[in-house]
Image (cartoon, rainbow, N blue to C red; front, side, top):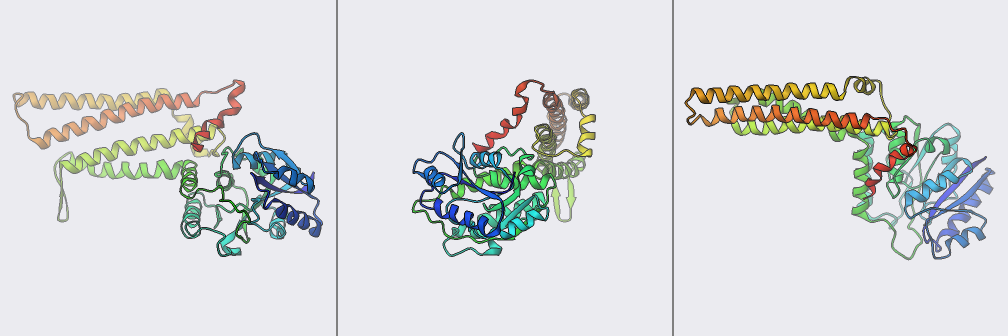
Length: 397
């Protein structure tokens, strides 16, 4: 095995590919590194493959379109212990990769380039990407995953081929790059950053990137791999707020300073309770699916939770809620009968109805989510089990 593969995905990059390959080859020659230049072609029709082969680069063909597909194909075919990948549009300088290889040799699993630290030439990055998209998405990534990365979207990065292959990355489009950082952070890989530069690409055509469309896909990916932040924390907040309001409001109006809360606030509190409970259930189900599919690492706390939750325990919890709802209904009807089935005070009707609605909803949610938990917990021993991660390919939609 060689030490380094310099990998470039390619889709009709005839205008810039030769410059990129030449710079990469010059770097290997200057540094004395035993390496190769690998082009992962994504269906070029402009002679890019012929250019690469003429210059002595190795070419592999991606099975279908998609930046992530091209990169994953190239990583699988790489012969190097380390891989440094970057776009073949001549925006990255492949002749200056010393900092990447130095950090990889020191034991880093993933070395990210940071264009904001290294320098972005005028016109190299659109205004919205530079001052809104990249900073915001990078901030969200650091906040949700604790990744020490200031430029989540930088395409120039180096990594240990073995460590990245073990992550089993699944996305097929531009989300492949942020997914690599997310999964590396979740699995505790060593991530470092080095400054790199960005120049205007040398192509005469427009880039493949679509600002709002691809930005949304990156954000969706960041949230998808963060079930704690997407489901659990909002769910706990809503459940706590709902309980804090619902319980006292069941006994009458609640005065807070100069503010009086009554049945209107009670209805909102009931909605908070039911929504918060369902979000917490969604967190558990999402975490179970992600762990079983190898998309997220497990933890001792989650494994203890898995052992405690079953369809039976969920049904017992649901039955308890439904029984309480039935009892509350009987009590409410009893009070109505005592009043001669005549008109009741509106506040009393609202409070009893809210209580029955909350208890019934929690009961049904417990039972249905319990059965879904049981379904996701089933072992799949068929040959197609290895293809479970395909289920998340809907993220590409």
